[in-house]
Structure formats: C-alpha cells, structure tokens
Length: 351
Length: 265
Image 1: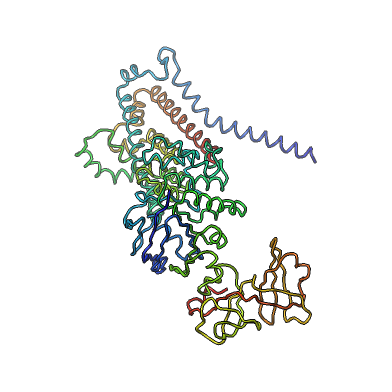
Image 2: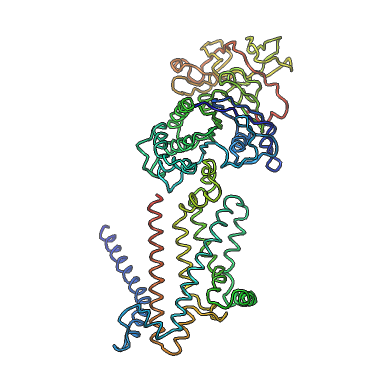
C-alpha cells in the first residue's frame, strides 16, 4: 500500500482576533510522515483538525490525492485519527473498538482485519479487554490500530503521546515510526515536543502564529535553522554577542560560518548550540562554572563569562574536572550558526 | 487507652443501632399500620396482591386510573428521553455556551409550585382538549415539563462522566454520521443515566396528583383520592401497593448506580 499526496493551500482560520492559521501552505508527499512542531497556540492542531474536517477553515483548500475535499464533512473523509485525550469507546473491548470503523464500512470479515491490526501494534493479547483495563500506552496503541484498520488515505496524530509517561512515550514513538513505515500511509503528526518531532518525522515543519516558519528534514531544521525562532524552539541555543565579518560572525574570538547571510550588522547576536561549546579547565580562562547538571551520557554545564551565562554540553566523564567555581576556557566549534536578526514581532518569543 | 477506644466504639455502635431503630420505626410503623388496617376482617381481604379482573370489576374508576397512570408514565418517560437526550448531547457537542441556560430552563419547573403551573397550563390545555381530546394521556405533556429537572440532572451527570466531544470526533473520523455517533457511541455509554432518568420519571408520574386533579383528568392518585371517600380500606391498600412499586423502582435504580460505579473504576 502506498500513500497519497496531501496539500493544504493558503489555509486561514481566525478565532475572534487570534489567527490560528494565517495563510498556511503545506504539502505532504505520498507516504511521508511530517511532524508539525510549535509552541501551544501556534495553529498546528487547528491545521490537523482542518485536514480532518473537524474544523472549517475560513478560506483556503484541502486537496487529498488530487481531490479537493475542503467542503467534505469529517465522516466522509478517509482519515484515521489518534487523539491526545484517550478516545477509545468505553463500552467496547479493544477488538470491538478497532472493528468499529470496519463495521460502519459494512465489512463483514472485520474481525480478522481488526485482530491483525492489534497484532501490528503489539497488543493482540489484550483484544478482549475494555479501555479502563488498559494502561495509557496500551489505549493509544489500540487507538492507532483503530485509526489504521480502516486503511485511511491519511493518518492524523494529534499529540498522541503527550498524556503518557516519558519511557512509554519514547517506546511508542519508535513504534509509530515503524508502523508508519510499514503501512506507508501519509501521516501528519502534531506535537510540541521537538525531540519527538525530530525522532519520528521524515520532514519537520516548525509553526508560529499560524504560519510555517521552516519545513525541512530534521537534521536540516536542527543544524540550519532559517531564523532565530526556529533555532530557539528546536533545541537549546546560547545567545552570544558577536561581530559580523563578511560571511562569518566572530564570537569569543572564533570565526563561525553563517547558515544564512546576515543583513544587520556589525554587532549581532549569534545562536550557538550547547554542543558547539567546549569547556576546558584553565586557570587563566575568562569563564567560571556556575552549575553542572547530570543528564546521563551527557551533562550540561553553565558558565559565567562576564555578565553572560553560556550553556555547554560535555561528556559526563569530564564532569569531575568541572565542579562549580572552576575557572574555564570556552572554545567554539566552527559549525554554522543562525543570527538573531529577527523583526521586532519576534521579541516575545525570546527566552 | 485501648479500653477507652473499645468502649467508645461500643457506645457508637449502640448509638447507631438506636438511630436506625428509631428511623426504622418512623418509616415502618405507618406501613405496618396500613397492612394491618387493610387486612382487617378476613372475608373482605383479597387473596392476591394483584387481582386485575376483580379490581376492574369492583372498582372500575380505580382500574381506569391505574391504566391511565401507567400510560402516562410510559409516554412521559419516552417523550422526555426523545426530547432531552439528543438536546443534552447536542448542547455538549456544539453549543457548550448554552449549557448553563439549558440547565436553568430545565430546573425551572422545580421552582414553580404545581398550582401555579396549572394556572399557566389551563389555557394551553384548552387547546389540547380542542385538538387531541380530553384523554388522560394528554397529561404526558405537562408531566414531561414536570420531570425535566430530575431527568436533566440524571442525563447530564451521565454525559459528564465521558468525554463526549472526543468520542464523537473519534467516531466521526472513523466514518460515523451524527445519528450513529448518538446511537452507537454516546447512548451505550450513558445507558445507566438514561435508565435512572426513566425510572425517576416513572416514579414521579405515578405519584402525581395536583395537576391531574386540577385539570380534571384521571390517574392513579386521583382515583385513590376518589376511592378514599367511599372505601377507606381499598384506597389505603392501593396506596400501599403503589408505595411498594415505587420503592422497588428506586431500589433497582440504586443497584444500577452501584453497578456503574463498579464498572467505571
């Protein structure tokens, strides 16, 4: 089974004075998994609901497989959806939940297909349990099976993992990726968790205020953010003062290449990732370790340099050399950085 | 120390039994008196609790009242469900802003005395008489208004227990139309709430007297009242039977509630 192409064209939707969607254009290639990422209220869920037909757009169109379905009600669109809230029908068992959509389509042999789907999501042994007898992760698995059972043209995932605890969340997102690759259904995944988006998506779309700021492969979005907002939202960034110098920016005496040419100048703010900052104990160094936080294999160290606070990521093995108060030297790795040369409307999003 | 606690516990247990006994006597004594009164004198006592042919032969007015009341109870429950269930679901799904207003309107009949209600209903019933005739079953309309507060509360509580909007959206994304959403998804999950609304309605209608009497229609209570003027024993006996019936209904209701709590945990 191969997926179909989906196009959202110039979608607009206002709630009172708030523009949830402000001219959103998005194209999903057949079989692709796109994650929409953004802070709450950026319109990502509205975009998904408009695609599902659960919400109407004020203007714009939704095209699936070359067919304009903008005016079609939700129940006549061919889409499977998994919700953030647990949405299994409480009076039906897991198997009956999965069969629900099949029976509406008048498929007599739905039982086999439903059992097959439960097997696909790995909980065939819980087929006869009721939702209240299942854990949150199991319920979302059943919801995924139920959405996929009807062989939808498009799969919509509306923050399906946010209600789950951390370990189950990571486990299930890998499963979702595996299953999506296996069935090849074009999928839109909405989340506010950047790690989740980068981990599962073929392409990540970063949204703000009803618009798409950047759409690209996870590595692209992370390494070459088009603007300060994306750099800030996807991953953690230091805001370090620097001087623009041709095609590069000089920060702490190191020349760093730019992901896109800077227009403002010459004094700019560069966005430097913590993993690009190297910390070395040095009695003559200009920095001083403030705090050190253990994160497992990697640790995070904050260093005071003058009145700046710089966050750096170091191997946990080196933590013993970096107790708070240690004098240190900072070295920046010459990976491309973004500049914070954004327009004034970006100000509220600064950290 | 332990002795003090044990003594206090014993005293509490005694107190509990005393309270129960006093309250029990308060409730049971009149009932016992009713039984004793209605079974006084062997030759007049019926051998069966329900002997319909004998009843309708001896007390035709009472038989009419019973039939009318059962009809009213059934029709009222039906009309109430048909009106209220889709409305409550729709308000929750599409018009959540109207919830307070609908709740207020549904609770209004509780605050209006029956006598005032009748004054308002009299001209309406002049039209009902004209259009539908004077059948006792036409009281269904008035009773549907009368039971709204109780039925609405019951159904609303049932709807609060489930996430109606999400379930409806899930069903719609699977291809269900609105009818299917209500019939196959929402209704099965509020079944016990719907049943308790229906039971409450039946219990309420079986005990209604004021409106029926003032609008010159017959029902069970009107018939009992009428009977009381000629045969005191019979009217008390019927009252007792009605009481038992309603008691059984309420017992069923609380059993259903208990089962729901058990299933929901």
